[in-house]
Image (tube, rainbow, N blue to C red):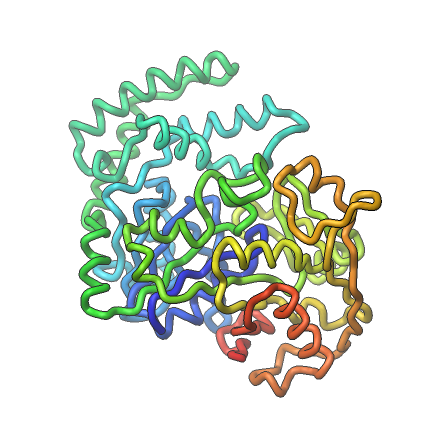
Length: 422
């Protein structure tokens, strides 16, 4: 398979968990490189549903090493809970799992600050998951963050935690929130540190050795291109680099070791939280929600839905260097008679064939649509390209052409077998 970076080509929730799971069959190591437990990757194995927030999806396959890289921010309590959940489901988490010693920690004051800042913003809120991800990355940038390497050193952790809680309690008081208990947090996180210590490794060296052996590496992205801190619809973004470049900085594997980039996108568009979504449409939202689809794996919130936006995905192709597209949720359109695809934006008489960086401009953009005839028959049983309805193949070819990348994978359901390699 070679070394592959998998990224979301839209606003997250594109179905990366399933595609990662499918591609992991050919991988030796799966590396999570960005984000935190604000991400949710859903994988079905038979009738069993798994929702993973921190542990790479590759953990569901035997004999695969799964690594949380240095670019991830880790909530130790949540990670312990996730490992225990997997073990209760008879999934091995032992020598097949490692977490970077330099990954930063998400602590209770990060979550409190996240929630309080959202309240202060009022109608201008970002729509975060309130998991403390932004404040944790903020501490990392401010060089006051605590890392896994601190967590497993009890004396150092206690001293650093005392200073950080003292400072952040003052901030929380100013925001009208209750101060946090140092003793309670110390006890909980020391226990988590003891539990996680066997997994804490120098993952940069580990991955370098894997490259020298010729192992196949799969880099698991979180969120999507337009939630990237640099390339997304700022400020309605996450706090990490979710694009392909983040795989290098978030793992320590250099660019020349990367062989291909797979971009995952839905056959339509969705978004969770605030910010512009040019193709948002009540008709398709009602259809998908009525089918029980498009509810967030992390928050349970209904996702905002719209028609496929080729302007956005074409930009994602450019930023990430996407070689192959994985289209998911094609079956969500099986009953739609007329399917729209955004091929450009318009404000008054001005046409945009690219995505404006200014969210105020993007929020004013009206989509220019092309229309495709729907296939109006089930696709969930298709296992080969030729088994798909002709009109579905026409639609997929158009998406590939408009997105400026080759079509590689089509998913017609949540199951591993509901996957077509083109």
